[in-house]
Image 1 (tube, rainbow, N blue to C red):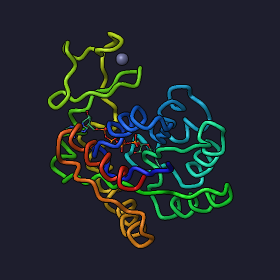
Image 2 (image 1 turned 90 degrees about the vertical axis):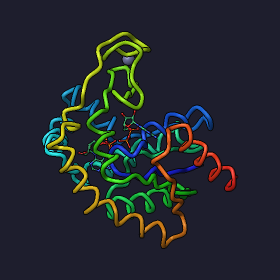
Image 3 (image 1 turned 180 degrees about the vertical axis):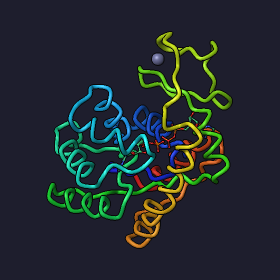
Image 4 (image 1 turned 60 degrees about the horizontal axis):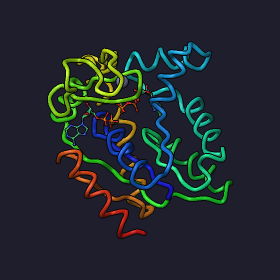
Length: 215
Ligand code: ADP
Ligand code: ADP
Ligand code: ZN
């Protein structure tokens, strides 16, 4: 099962990817997570990426494409993958199709999680994350204890780019640079639109239905 999760920042890609990994036992690649790790490890690539991320802009295609290609070629993904946050530009989508072709693979479907702008802003500004990888929302999915991770007890943090100034910029970038991918994948027949405004478990039920029909 080779799947792309498409959707604006805050649409719930990471949340749904986590559920899909459990249900289908397919590994997940999040380019945002890869970059955040590189930034915290202060690698050369992380230092370059940080400047773009802080401004809410996309990291240049040539950096992202190389990283994803390298990952997807590893054995871990030989039986499938869920891509979250990639592709985000038409150039990235073309490069993905080309690289998969070289590996004798192809995408099975692209799930576009659809959420309106007001809801996206609420979701992003209320998001809190833990270093262990868990994601919460102060209203929609709060931790049991105020600002403390349920799983590991560490204090939760707000991502710098989830502050309102950067959120607006990221949404603009999404509408200008990533939205064209909806038509791109509609035209090649891979697109499946998912109503992302429902609760996380109801969204997942819809995804299960769509994948179930395919299987
Ligand atoms: P969200 O999940 O909120 O949409 P991500 O974690 O996917 O955000 O991405 C955070 C940041 O990492 C982006 O704003 C961008 O700077 C960078 N990034 C992630 N994926 C890509 C990509 N495919 N192309 C370019 N930049 C990316
Ligand atoms: P993305 O990876 O697309 O940026 P996330 O999965 O991190 O999005 O979700 C963004 C925020 O919204 C998180 O705080 C998450 O807990 C919350 N969230 C995710 N899905 C839903 C949902 N269906 N309803 C309400 N809040 C949600
Ligand atoms: Zn934690």
